[in-house]
Length: 256
Image (cartoon, rainbow, N blue to C red; front, top):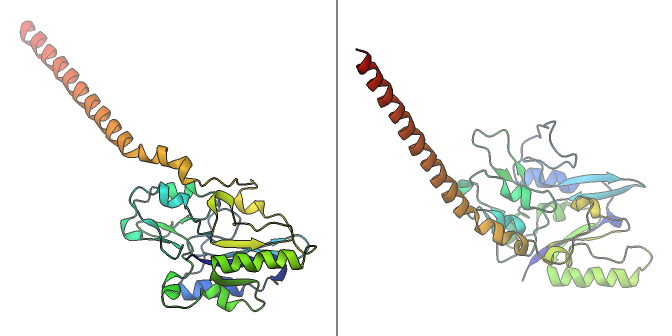
């Protein structure tokens, strides 16, 4: 059964204890901002961030751990992997650095680590080692108001639906992540629209791997085709140059 996080925006006070706990547990270094970074607080050294919105709203941003992750389907070598707990993890030792996962993600989560000699991608892994050990993620453990909680996805969905029913005037009647792009394991309740978490777009329910599978499956054949083309051009050019050289030598011999 999938593990999940439910964040209730109405309960968040903006204390950033979740951000601090994430950096501490994952041994993340102080951020070194780049001018081309997205203005959402996430980076290779910040796996969760707190976005400040009007009227005192704070919204936590992190990997959504999709049930059918586009990043996993886009990865050519399996560096991105979906676990049986529904947590999307990353193996840097086999990463090519192609950044297809960054392009595929509808939430813009994976970030490139520009400070490494051999750069690779980094993102939230929902404290996977802690979850495997029977603990909860550091971010949910650190939250002082219960704005973000951890549990089984089905149980958290039930909790969310109960809150919508009990407090109909408190929330927009929607659970973000329940169905979009096949569903995610990071869910939200909110009294403000959260479409800014997905590039200001409303996502439909169809999972993205269905959209990317055909294109990504063709990538190896494209590499082979381009390689064959380049080899052919090289041989053609070499032959052409050789013919020109022989012609020059023949003309020089005739002049003598």
